[in-house]
Length: 233
Image (tube, one colour):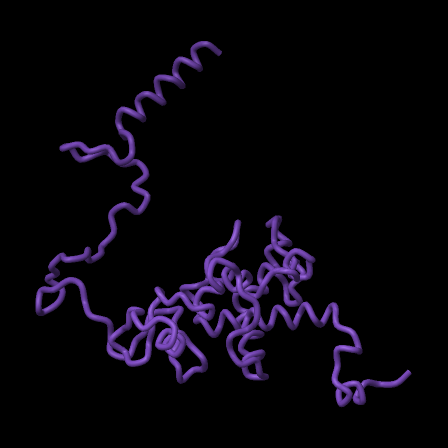
């Protein structure tokens, strides 16, 4: 056992001496056992490139493209419409009517001042609910389940800590806080601000509230016209 420990210690020291600590500067090229994808073909900022005829590496965005996570006013109430009224100094892209992420409005952040706001700041209609269901199915149901009970596919493989949208803690959360969680993530949940537009995120919030109401709703919540359509015992 003593010789095994000596051999093991010598082997560890040898590997450290050969590989060297990650990130240490040296004029010599290190011997990399695990390069960890450190060396990839890419164009660095402000660097030239012989691939393009003009020799310029960084390229301008393709005409008509927009960054993920931002809205056009034509697509419904969006960042640009709000920013023009509440934050005239908000940064703008070269595309008309598009506002970038320094917009402090409730629509963009889910906050009213320093507190989470409540209420859905876009028009809630059948189209928005359909959008929310589609996006929820794509991005949320895999973990949270189709009804939001936290029993999605990932829970079958031992993934713990998945939120149940019907817990009192989440039911009582302001809409802005739920929107923020979708945008930036929380605990083991990845943020989807780069994947979902502002309207998409609010559509998911609206759909989650609908799922919660479906579990907690009462006949008294219906309009007289809706109650008239219910089957009688």
